[in-house]
Length: 167
Image 1 (cartoon, rainbow, N blue to C red):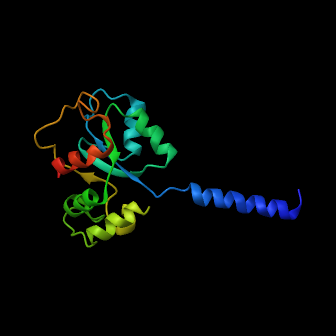
Image 2: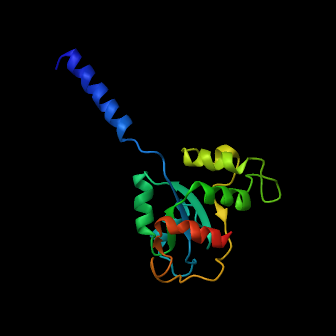
């Protein structure tokens, strides 16, 4: 291969990568099931996702293949779906905690944090804990059945309604 062919091939792959990159979409993951009778491999995966307690929530990147495999492994214990900006702002405003602890006030603007997270930043860059503690959902849930009857598994856009009931 000549130098020109190599250069054009490199530019072509760079163009494909730039075109192929999608806007970072974020997924909200909520632990629904408790900790009793959980297999050790599933418990380890939930721990790596920082879902250590019932009704805790994390925000992860949709395009990360490692996260997708983890979600597939623990889909019997979690509810997840794509979160929108409005719900993320409410979540940050009402349930975000400072890295210093619960008693310290969150100084970040919720709309700035939400737009930053949706653009690919992490909560730790805003000096916030990487998870949210939620209330049990108002009006209850069917926690043993999969979506659309229950809440387990991929809830798609309906995760926003579930989060609104848990704030």
